[in-house]
Image 1 (tube, rainbow, N blue to C red):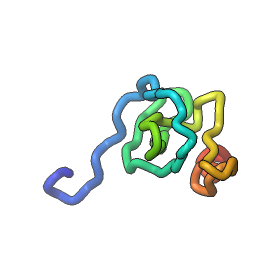
Image 2: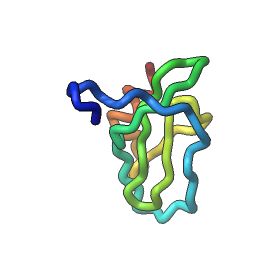
Image 3: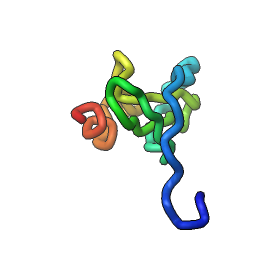
Image 4: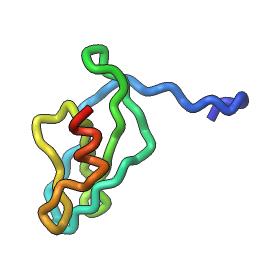
Length: 79
């Protein structure tokens, strides 16, 4: 983190990491932010089960182990 206490600037968008599902999905915001010229800032989510990543520009929406879309993911998807 910069010395003045400002948060790190978003990094350029890249392809998300994608790994085979382990059926133990727990999706959480990572704290990382990416920047896409078309849509602006993207919050990055990661699955604690397999390590896959998700941002709202992906054509799919993650679900957790119960088959539900996590609340934080739903809020981000709606942005």
